[in-house]
Image (cartoon, rainbow, N blue to C red):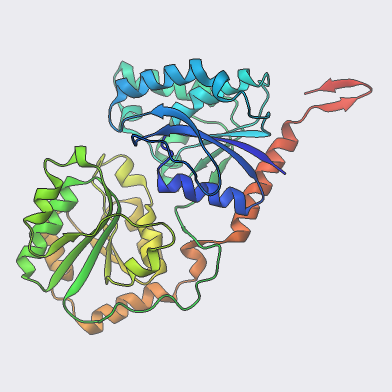
Length: 391
């Protein structure tokens, strides 16, 4: 059975749990190691007790750099009870640093490496010497990677390919809803296909501009549109998230949720899904295809996207969704303010007409992923010829 050492920068990220679920469903065994953004380390992630490498604070680059340095020095001790893996997956640039160290710990510089990059951090796009240094470090550490996993073709077209950051083959794994057990028939319509219309903004809540637009629009609608927020707010990105939400009569925050277990229930209560993110505007936010795009469409929510983004291109190619022409409450009012039940049913019907595989990742996708990783391992195994090993 393929043994994967999975190095991650945030053990409590729901996307890490989903990737672990994918690897397990595909037939791999996993050693999980990484940093956390909670006071206490998680005791269990999908039956795996993770190796805790310490705290890494979101948005605090200097602290994270020292955390990496400390983890590098402590890695031999942290991995002392771990058998040599068949392959290492490093989830983002920081973990590439630790992957390089892990290879030395296991005495295996030829250990296959997969670089998983699902966001392009704004620091990597800086044009000053610091940005150049980070990109050089990424190119250097990823030079021997056998595979690059990313979630949007725009990351490849706008960053990896033109800058020559990674020469490895690319595996596109979109942020689709993980559906290991069939949920046939759960795409029920929202409770009422009439006003008040409900817009859901779910997932990583980190965009002040989105909150401002949705708040102003909901006030103007005077109850005809209600806004529901679910997930984990990045509090450092808001001056007073709780106060801002509490002051809005038609906007509410209903806390975190389990992904993928709760998705059918929470998306079944809304009509539209806000898939816009102005965080790192013009860069990462323009290129990504977010989780909420796939999750909302899977359960029949009509997506609202921003013009001139990869998400808008994705929707336009499929003839679905609503495209906001400019990032203002006025624009949102123009495109959805006059929503009728007939128009809504048309929009929703187009979403539901598409093949479910557009939105979901199933067990066969998991098997295919692990099979590709096995082939990568096989390709890097030394060949024995007349008693000699040839790389």
